[in-house]
Image (cartoon, rainbow, N blue to C red; front, side, top):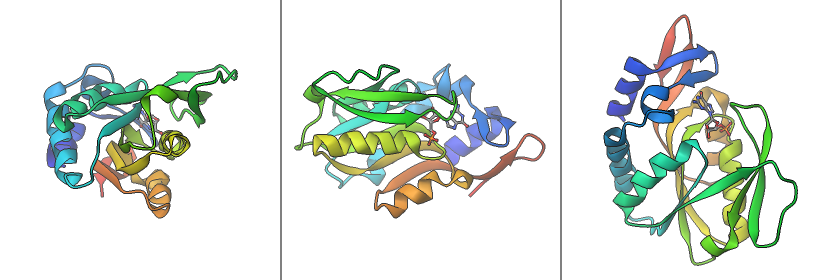
Amino acid sequence: MELLEARIRQDGRVLSPDILKVDSFLNQQLDVQLFLEMAKEWRRLFADAGVNKLLTIEAGGIGLAAVTGLVFGCPVVFAKKSRSRNMAGGVYAAEVHSFTHGTVCTAQVSETYLSASDRLLLIDDFLANGAALDGLLSIAAQAGASVAGAGIAVEKAFQGGGDRIRARGVRVEALARIASMSPETGIRFC
Ligand code: 5GP
């Protein structure tokens, strides 16, 4: 998506060969007008996919998913992260390794909010190694829900998570795909 790529070129900062900082419009200050255009693009891509609910993971995906929920006209559920190993009854849960924090957390969704009648679109800000998406796919499977695909803002394609998850048969639509990046040479899109 040209609009998002242009914004990344303009405001993104490559902190290291595998970390892109986009706090000024995606991760801390939120450009909701841009989110709206991204949501419309996912709506176009998944128009016939029968999506009735969005599923994301806190915290980065929530703002994006909320705006996308308005465009799809459907509820938005987010997985809460908790370090607790005490899995109380009534939740779907998956261990997720956090790419940015280097920690492992338990992503949890109350059983109340997902069911076998749901057809989900998974939403997240970044796709790197794919751990966050793996967690959401696991939670969807536990609920018996079907997955129409994943809408990702930025895929760092060189980290391989997207290829691995596509190879599992999941449709992944990333609006900006980065082929390579470095603090010295900048960002090259796919
Ligand atoms: P994965 O689980 O695919 O390895 O990483 C995806 C998650 O890590 C996203 O939910 C996002 O929060 C975070 N993440 C991965 N790479 C980056 C990055 O380059 N910049 C930022 N800001 N977050 C990232």
